[in-house]
Image 1: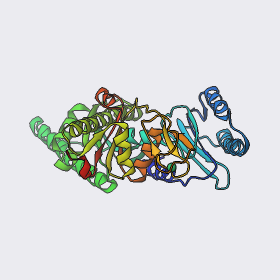
Image 2: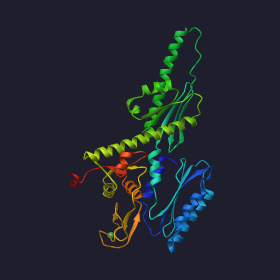
Image 3: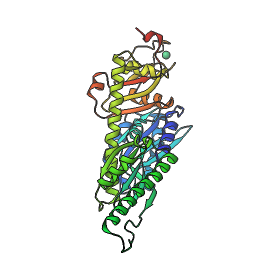
Image 4: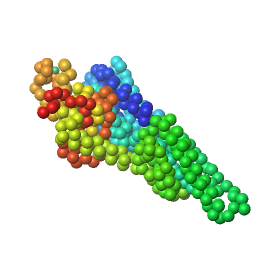
Length: 380
Ligand SMILES: [Zn+2]
């Protein structure tokens, strides 16, 4: 699956209207067309069924049955992960997403789909272009969500065309150098055209270090701004190994970017700028639609929130209230605060950064955001 499709599916899931029936969100790791740890999955399913009765139990069983059927017959041999969202009841919903990257084993039942793991995936594996240059050839590939999705361009010119015997050695060397220069210039033109036509934001150069250095040196400014790394590889390396190396590099770069975002949030929040940190303020800003970029630490595990069944008011960072503070109703249900945060963020089209390692963000509660604007009450 490609990034654009994943984005669309996440949007669908984030905006799925709630019904009486609950949604089963099921994430699994796959290998060779089957589920890797079937036992772990079955245990989680058994655990979820405990304490369910009546219509809720029947709906969950129906929803699970569809998942089971799908897992038995539909798995792709090269898929490494799958996310399935299934709901029975009056308005059934079923969305299976097979991916070329592994996913954690995770099953949840809730009134809305659990999309956090998909959002994290979207943040980690973007799409980018790799240009692999060796002495003999140049290839330009698109990597999308952790797999090569398209060979955009390939060229194997005869670098060493026959040279007339009358040429002196010096003459020949000059000629080769000039050809090599022209060759690089031409390839950069091709690259430029492909990158702008495909709307790519990131570029990695790979291959012969001498050639990639020359390419990198000659990139026009707008392409150089998209270059995130140069990955050396010998002429004998397999394309798949080179691509693996660029994926590792890309993930590292992405993590750096997320860390920078976390640093910016903390700095701006301290300086009274357009940012806030902490579960409560971040949640409130999301509800108000004021968030530009949501930044979450990967280790972020907020306590459950409480939502009023009557008016929908949500409380975070609170022990279970005896009654709703807005309408006084007594029925409150718990909800997963992190899930609700990413759902709200997706609904309003915010960027979401998940930071793998950020002690400083964890010290500030593990969540924060860059704001679109501040409220007058926030100016002190
Ligand atoms: Zn209420």
